[in-house]
Image (cartoon, rainbow, N blue to C red):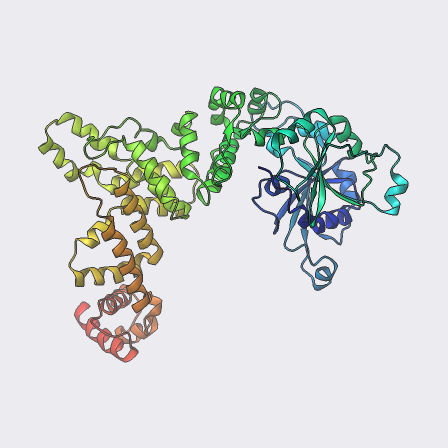
Length: 573
């Protein structure tokens, strides 16, 4: 259920942060606490969010300026510390490597008139107030490492916790009993988890005790202790396998509509792990469906940042499926949305074009993590609605067979739809070209397989040079899952031929390596000496030499290439 092992690995980071801020009353917040509890990561932390009482100016004034490169953002009061890499620094804190700390003091937020940013920020000394303004309970987890010292003994003037029988869980003897654990969190002040070889962990949900801990008015009666503060009761949600908004979900979404996208990203990322199976709490999901239209106010580039995070590593299939359920697919992927209810001949394609596209993505993401390939898979059939519109005019099958001779159904046209949608989403020109490439050539491996053995080998060499090895292999992946995603009851998938083609491409690549113009043993200057001046003829000769080398008609040796270049110069002039 929950993992309490690994917090000892946070101690060096926590002590460094205390030294850098010249403060002991600091808290780590958000993902770093969540990931340890969910057993997603227990070391190698690259960026850590910190919060504490006070205003940004006073926090900044108290910083140890030698702790690293320091940046301050006045608008939201965030201070960033990037650890310096000097040899002296390595000796001081060897355990903390390449880490960025972002410090934002406790704050309260005013109204959100633009459905994105708070109109007013107010700094506070209350951790509880800070937790209320956060979006998900999953992001309202706070961590502190308690270490008793002589100085602390002099400062502590509050009560000392008395550990009561029945409130201590010993993981050395048995697994955590989740029902008993939640009952104690609900009815008592705390639950202490004792762990063999690891320091004890204290979990606190009681708001009165949380305030005392923030103000350092509790003596824990222990020398060292990890403290997890959970004021919004996320632990209860995770035990019940739910993602819940803090407070009223209607308010959270109307404050910042981007939270809809961030929340479905959370689910798509976390549910990638086999041991996590989360769904939205019902009121939270209803609010997302109710206010989906507010996303039209959010800049598309912000939405795309969230999408790319999922497509680069996580469950892209689940993310798109939730977009569809929320009725926002049409905002970002209009060509794909048009594929919904675009029925195909059942005996060839039992699903509509949209379902087919989604199923192919589901399978492809298991073997290919290139986000541009995944987007290409998603869009590979976006021209089908036009194809079947024409088919609806001609009902007989013979006329339908003529579909593939129409320009409108050619993948080149489908690639244009892809370019249009992804350009509007503010993808870079290079990204758009790459996604469109996969749409345009997603059937290309079948063309290679239709060639004779000798011709295929020459063409593979040529396209490895022109497109690159990875692109060719990616096209094979797309072709495989395009065919399997048909679930065609009448047609054999034939994908074993595509798998064999992948192996052949790899073998040819290993045999001849990747030969490009820069790999030729002659260059432009050599050819200029032959033709007498620079110009288009130089590049014509170089490209012809490359073609001959790839086709194994001549060897890639300088004297042979120069002799052939002289012949070509005469013939091409």
